[in-house]
Length: 586
Image 1 (tube, one colour):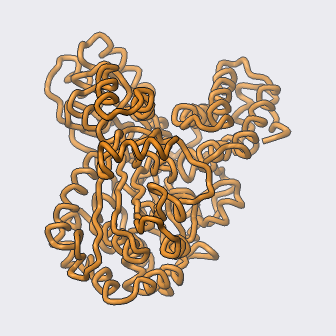
Image 2 (cartoon, one colour):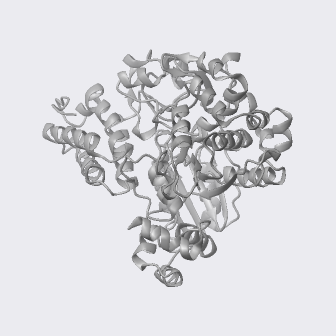
């Protein structure tokens, strides 16, 4: 049915626009979608009304709602949660509930995790992220209560220089000036592309294979193997695609955000290198709507690149054709999963698709597709310039190269760091990020977003590699690190994680859709003081069912931190369930 609906959409809208695109444009024009809007669009396109409704309701920002002149979204991610976001939300909601035209909602991660708690003010087409710390809450309350103008300053993530020259790979062409094409080219951006276009596409693949680069979005799949697979995969229509997964939604992660804003042309160069390597002529950048500054920068960067002949019918005069379309996300975390992202680009409800077939064989519109995250593609120009062997000389074991880390929570110096893979967690927290403030003790760190493990003091010497973190019961993931001091209640953190899964599940598979809701109910019962050991046993069984039976990494990954809580931090549960023991099955 999905293929038939895509065909119907293409018949009326053309391949350049989908129902998702039309709904997004309509929501931007009107502020909110009504039943009448959806029915009128379905009639115009001769599509089933249920299909149009199902696409709209999949996304937080396209669901039918009463329009608000001012919409305030308060972040509920872990980094903001430990800085008092819930209390800020309650105070804002209580003070502004009676204010006409103002609505307070929650959002998970705005990408300014070192400045939390954070919020975003939405007024018409304007989106203004700001910090609620340091007087920000009082300023927001005063302005919004009186209906006065409010233009808060945008937070800034600290970017720390690498400690060694060896680790200076992605940050070597990084900074506010690199958003402009002239400065970027003067510093060598697009030089690797120009040289690659003079040779065979296979040479790019050979260098990426030699680099041993693995995907930086979480799965860690070999990037060179993916490129080789797409190049060798047959396409009935001759079309192949490169999709940049810029839908970074992990709470505590702002790696892609900073690359998108401070190295857009490096990311675009990497995208072009991937496209040349596999023979793609079309590309997409799927960029989450919670990053308005990145969206504006990319619109400008793409326009500059087209004007300079870097995108278009003959890239740098080579005869190779490739262009990129920017697509804005509208509030669905699951679209960070590659098959969900592709369904979103096709304009159908973005539920996860079973694999195989993998996108490298049958991806966007059934054609071979490279789907890589921002950081992975940003590494390609350096690899092509310096050689795959030089990149593979960095790192540890099977985890080669450098990795950007975003560190937030209870540390003195939060921000973005570039390190060689293999650096111990202890060094990151207590040396690079300055340690725990206020003379408090370290309790735990969550690595890899809501699907990542929660490691305690015993795991502080774990090297940050794919393999070592897996052996420690965690995962590298996107490498967002949120640090918790001794005051943090990890049971409440666990509840927040399973609730996040329940809200963001695409709903396609039973274990994730039902298990996450049931787990949230159990956590609520435990936090209310009514939990028993039997409830912990059921939570362990749910954990196993979700891990084994879920269709994608959302339902399969959320059990990782919950398992850590149930086994590694059982003392935290003892506060609510006296005599708590780790369940028999986790």
